[in-house]
Length: 127
Image (cartoon, rainbow, N blue to C red; front, top):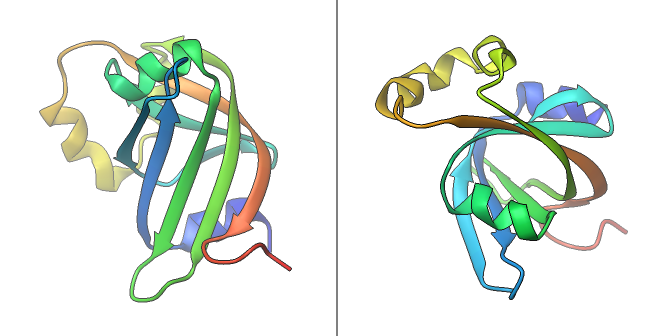
């Protein structure tokens, strides 16, 4: 199964972990990634710590845990580019997250594109 298909059907919770240039780590709850193609994903971010960290350190890890058990994926990713207040944000935002948009209307939103560097299961090394 393609990774994009996995995330289209999977239910669970995700965490995007980033670090600044000095290595200070931040983590935030994020929805499932948006697949641009099988090697490029995107996340929608507010102008907060995750976005700030990615300005000085392009590397991140997205950890996804499926509902009900310890299955999921770890995505090791590198930032490619970002778009500020992109019209594509409204197009790709999932219906289930529209309420988040109404709570966080203030400030700019960023569509941040990442290259998939490595994919591992939630637990173990994938071997």
